[in-house]
Length: 358
Image 1 (cartoon, rainbow, N blue to C red):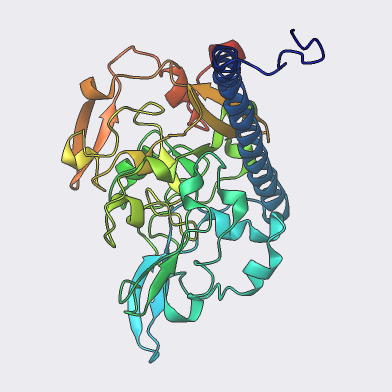
Image 2: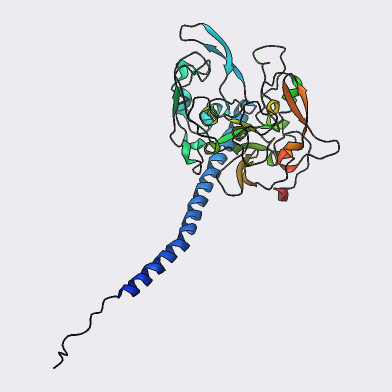
């Protein structure tokens, strides 16, 4: 006789279990992009906030000192024995903004009378500043690179990096020491040349807010230039190790131009005429980011906008140039207006720009 007290098991069959697992896998596959998108949105928001703080710091600096910080400049270097070593890269705009971006301890560690890359200032460039790191450019978070003898006085050189650059204008010549080449740098952080330590040499003075005649809401101040976009070749002077140093404002370190459009493809390598690309790399001197579709820029009024890769920009491959003292200067065709992207990088070009064009 059948035992009616014994009931069939209530467990899952193998087929039912596999179906459940498949459903869970599909749900995870659907959810993962949403999670990644949410994380990237948070990273992009933090990047926006970083640029906002830098822009506000620069505005406070201008209010206190009458000008914005200098862009690329030169400064006297003294060896450990006290002998002069000539003039080399000086402190950049990010170093000048330390007191205005709640980085007073770093500023207090600086000897501002000496350049950033020599023994007596060796502790400052290796101080990593999270304010200068875009979270999407995670490769530089806490990264320190050291090279023996690489400092201008022959001492051990260490540095940390930045995801941001001050905009110098439409073009950055390799050695901007004549008036024509300096004239192509119309941004908020142009090369000051050598005039400040060599009277009579061509130079541009630091920029005053009154000289931004295009309007502060129509002028770039800082933009993204992602260090992680550079080739990581693991050598002291390769693009990844040699660009993006935060402490000075040399080309490709914390200064960039708008000669090339944002996120130019294949920008790790030299892609233009050698005389128009003095450092041998495009990405370190141009706007790049890991945000899909564009880059964040801080404007001279303190606002931050996302500039799309599709913004109107000139065709750099067809630009005519003139040669001046081993440098070249891009020349717009007669009658052609300055495209929106380049126009936003000039402070006094007289261009009329609508906010709906970017």
